[in-house]
Image: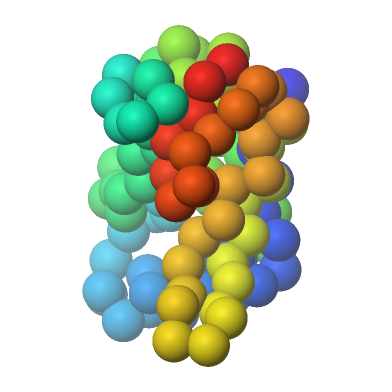
Length: 107
């Protein structure tokens, strides 16, 4: 089981956490919504929950819950900047298809 960050994603999160002034990492989860059925939920966290599962890439902690991990196992979170557009890109091997915006998927 794994959730990975690219170096660019880890650096972006590290800077954001430093600017925020607090936090132990980010939580990556899923919710039933979006144009393809499920969408990614990404947030800063100040404290891990009791059932959270922790992964670490380049010194940055990523937490998820056991239910989300079923759909996120093996995902790589990247941070891209193309022209005026920048943001996280989800490379999920469990997604059978995804919408054009890349924020929702169907497993």
